[in-house]
Length: 425
Ligand SMILES: [Zn+2]
Ligand SMILES: [Zn+2]
Image (tube, rainbow, N blue to C red; front, side, top):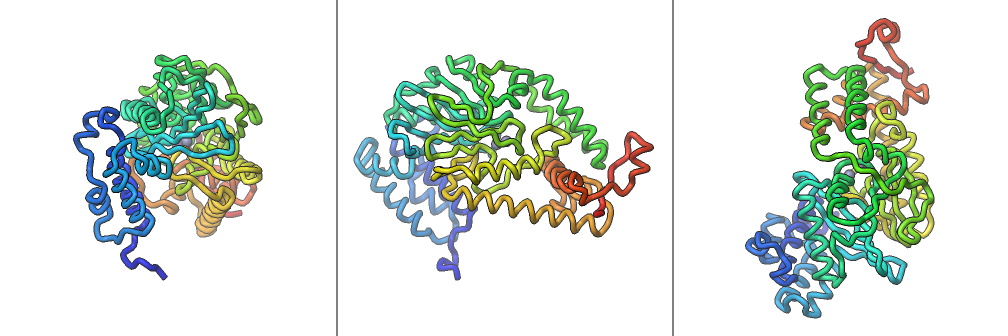
């Protein structure tokens, strides 16, 4: 039974949250905000009601709205403004408590590509200023990172400037997480740390793009992707080469390493070869390994070693076993209060998807492109590539275990350009 017949669904909740975050600008001194933000600062109530349309405001939002209105009336720096900021953060910049008495951990939302938001984390401990992920380096990403640091100074009283960052730890070599490394190298003295299996992508970016494009091309031919679509997707994939130049990391990380005076690195390959989670006392920064809503995209190991579902499952098991984690914070989306349940949900999700692949392949032989269509329907833009690699990772997992076999082996043996068809054994 839903207590609120016109309650807020997940999407409405997200836009409600966005609306409140915009209105929270009123809790900062006007001079701390960029002019364009000041000019369009909405009132909290109008912003919220226009964001949720016909839905009824749920109690949690009503409470937050009332607190925000009180804090706005009292003005920047007032006790109620400080209380509000402590509890809810301001404009998406939130401070999290950790078990380490001297460690302050901040989440900074950064728009890395249009409509795509990453969480960058700032760790402040004594003299140490450390970033976990650095955004994409695009203009919106740099703008939001600078704005986030300004808010940390203004609302939380931290003395922190981009130029004073000591360490930049990159969670994995996906451009939305590491692209900002170049800008940071130019503007700060920060040492750049990345897992050894992803260091090559940063250090030899041009090589990485060329090899990945070639592997992807072969993969898509075998998967049965039409020529025109294949070329379009490769061009789309190669687009990121305009966004970055190689940067040599200062330190290559390995599983179990301690960084920044004691935070432990956990290597969790799967979504990306060198993906790491960082344990900051009782908080686990999970990057793209575990996210609160979506399941991170899977890539077949035949395209990139150390990806693939087998690695991913093992890495899920690894973080599930970690002791002393009270909160998990992902590289996107919301905090995860029960990491183990979320890991179980994601595992179940992929087991079901594997079942679905078995079912489809029981009905007849399919190419990976055909399976991708059967699983996800027609996709557009970059979604086509994500659907293909996701389907391919599941096929690879089952084929690797002998549950699927190649239905047209003699054709594959005879022709370089044969599309591989899979069926249930
Ligand atoms: Zn990623
Ligand atoms: Zn990501």
